[in-house]
Amino acid sequence: MLRISGHYSEDGSLGVPDHLNRRERSLNMAAVHSKDTGPEMAVRKIAHALGYRYRLHDPKLPGRPDLVFPSKHKAIFVHGCFWHRHNRCRRASTPKTHEAFWQEKFLGNAARDKSNRRQLKKLGWSVFTVWQCELKNPGRLAERLDEFLAG
Ligand SMILES: [Zn+2]
Image (cartoon, rainbow, N blue to C red; front, side, top):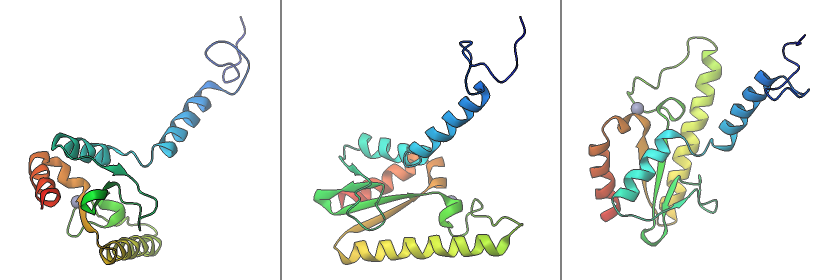
């Protein structure tokens, strides 16, 4: 049987090439779940294991913190070291090409983060930032989170 590659999906029906379908699917998933990244899920699990209840991404708060503890007026941001420029972290490297572009982007991110933290504090919230690389040592991070949330 002649089969024209790329014009049949797995069930044999004529349609969008299957490899594109798969790719689109994964891109779509990535977009939909962009707020539910690995590090953030890990922090949620730690907070949950410590016995704290939280809300996610409160849109009414500056910067939509990743975890929000409303009764405590405490908020947690989970930041990727690269995008949010973790100070002296080797993950916060600057790409060698288009350096000016990256610098501008990074400066924008850092300024936004700072402004969000400042606004939250003004509104009476305590803010804690978890850096992606801190998840290498979950025990230590759990201790620090517990300290922050219990205080
Ligand atoms: Zn880092």
